[in-house]
Length: 372
Image (cartoon, rainbow, N blue to C red):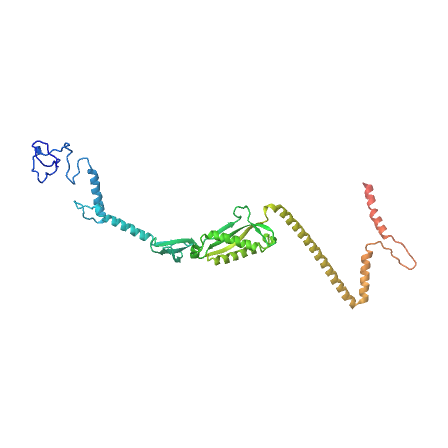
């Protein structure tokens, strides 16, 4: 039931606060006879749309200025009581969304590829094409996506030890153990296959290299792996790696394999060095023997050639050649012994020519000693 007005003048009807219009079935009253709130009079109410003193005036001014600024930037619009731009009509959100969408389309519709790379274009994750260096167009992300790969860059894998070991030990064809350290140089030949065919390309290249190296070392002897056949083994490993990777459709091009170290295991390194030194000494002695044998053979061949030349002259003049050979032989023999010359038959004069020479050499030396 309605509250009864207890103010002066009484009467039935609802109460109204100051500034409210009287009810339709309540006659207008003068201010002194206005109805009274049963809890007492509250603060006066301000009309709608007009800020009260000290309450929200600055905030309303800020909103109004913001509306006018947006109106000037986006072309204005109706909706406010004073003709300003109304934030509630939502058209500024459409403008902002359109601008963001346009920027997104423009920025995600092209891509650039440098001189060392190639780009693999995917549409919803499916391969579309491979493009080279330059600027290219595509559909906006996430419709099209681009994967860049360095196709001209030489990648290097250093294989110096096995997992969990300090040495990379391999078994040779003559049942010896060798410790190898080598590097593999490779690059991307087909970006599409490289991206889709291998889950971990670098790991695959490493494992293929180890497999190919062990296969080739198992065919070579220890001495070949340590020395003269090292370069040939490396070439065979590269060829075997390329065959395996091509069978995987990996898109990888193996550029080379370099063996950096080939040593026996550390545990037998000292003994191996002793054996190697003994082998070098044996080889040195063999070389000396071969040199001496070659010298003797050359001398014998020279003597045989000289004899053949003398025999040819002997056949032309046997008597003269026989006498010349006798005289040359006697000259060589008598030049090294004392000689006695017999002048006439039955007379044997003795002429000690060597003794005379010795006395002649000693006689001049004695006066010189006396003078001292």
